[in-house]
Length: 360
Ligand code: SF4
Image: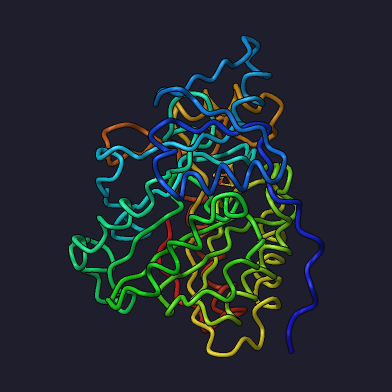
């Protein structure tokens, strides 16, 4: 039996302004995004050149709010179109956009994107996708690992953005899904999202070559995820995608060992199992990512979300080297062991058909 409908999703994001560069206006996809925004009453600013002029207020709070409310349509230069490896999620990272309009107090973008948190979406989508076939079979994750070989060469679209959050304005995710649907190759597009409006994706000819994952956390931690869709709506969206024949997944992230985490995550796993119960031909994966931060990301997040109760005090933490030679704070060994054991047991019991892809 299909699950009950989810509580209402939030309204689609509407920026307070859209900036479009001169070069972006040279692409039909860029012009379509601007036209869609204009039709929704969003003021469109046609920049005379390709430099983004932001004119943000001096006050940091107001500057943050103004940046988060700005969508820029730009052209991804060749350096941004060069694909990067992105273990353990996928072989390659492919960016359709950079930035996200939501306000999560742990947002991983704080450590990876510099500058004001505006959202940039790329007009030259066809050029971005055209780089993909050269990478077929050349990654180090699903291209190499026997356990994940059935996924083909994988391309992750959620590293620097939440593509579903932008979809009502951009159409980029739909276009990429349809592109993979036409690509007769052992390849897969992957995206994960804290949003829920999947209506535009359901009827696409996806060919089973896109996996959507719902990025979820207990409702009790919703205070850390401002501006995202309710978790129940994300799970209902995932169920609709499964019913439309998409491979699906759960990204439980970031796992936060706050007081009461056992009950909160136990209920979350049960809710996910209920949302997916009875789905025909379900192809379900699970990815488990614990909360971590760097000195840089903590400084940015404390500036963006000064009142957040998210614990980044260093308690129960251990220092770990990053792939790029820096340091990050992860949970200490005892906390990690408790979390990992809990998730392995509860997922095996509630979602026995799920494939666990990685723990980090
Ligand atoms: S939804 Fe994801 S990308 Fe967007 S603010 Fe939250 S953590 Fe960051």
